[in-house]
Length: 557
Image (cartoon, rainbow, N blue to C red):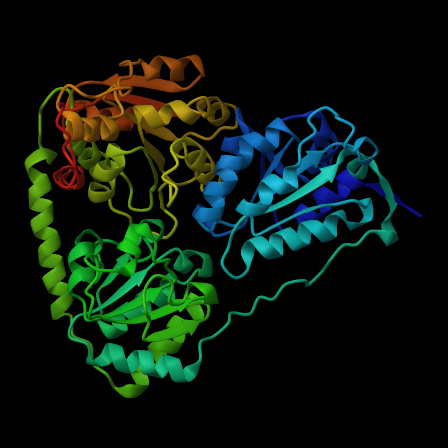
């Protein structure tokens, strides 16, 4: 009669889920699990800060569509992971966080690392629990994966007291779940699908606005089929870019504001109507527009805006229904509205073109982003991390494939760029992976360049080094006057030398004509690489200029 340790059941459960990587930071409670993972051939990626472990799990999830896994020690390890978990929660990313906990025999005695971890995690996870019996470890992990990956995705948390991990169980008594979650996709109500198609078919300016629900449903092919069948223009949210290639004649990302303000019928597909979309309300949206909303989560239907047709269902399943219904009616699409939006996009590109060829020093960040866009492969994965540089990059660096654009998400969290990039590179070793970071954002998780070097993840990091927190500086000056910027200056640091010290390739770029050659050298180095690009702090994005117009200028008395 064989026995097994609790730590071995953790590894078995992860193996059953097909887990490739566990992102972690070493600590005593994890040692038994590490040994079991090693026996199973599951790679452990040890990081320099627990926040980065969770962000890597999120980056893995977002670039693959699969559930990411992180593991941390109790107390400070869990506390350091909180920001990453919250980012997963508000960004609806399927991540399972495993953590140690004090021995049951030491409960509430004031033990080392003693922390009420469940109370901390409950508000920022879909599900959180502690395992008190060794034989049920795999069962709890299976629940965590089910909760994280079904319905609207999100993080799940499981903690294991040290003596539960060390406990021995007879193998026949261990609960090893099989076939414990559905693979079915919930379809929409056929009557509501028919009503939605009827509305779209008679619209003069219809629009499809899609979000990360397309990613998690793996529905990009169904989306493209529906778009091309109906000839309706589509616009992604930042988290869904690339699901329809952005050079497609019906994808109108950079004319989103015009599209939402002028559309008469809008199909919201797997998207939350949050601040990114002006809550779905005027002036961002036409107040008279009729609306259709499709979401797997019933509580999202009608949130923040009245809905004419609300369909609860999986994005891919409902898109297939919509396509079949459209074809059955004999409706004919008209792409004249899409052409109008594409014309607006071209006009916007011309505005940027005054800067894309700039030879100015320090380098214009628009020129930097333009050069990056011209250099990258079509299937390159790009992470964007920062404030002002994010705004430049989102307008100038396009996306063509699902899961290839990784932004901070609705929290605006800084420091995501390098962790996301490392995870994406590990998951997609044959694709270019590049992170564009502001110098401020780089400071949060810059030491993860060491993680990239140790684990053979040759990402390229481009630091836009303008030696300041540009968004804060510009806003302070806009409100209080040109001399009012406080707590916004940074040193013009040689981040390339830091990279070299961590056994990475590093280079400073000061001439705009050297950007592309430097990118070539970085990608050819075979190492994680960092380009320290000296950029102009006074170049302001158009959206920032627009925000400054609305700021309440305060005059000193």
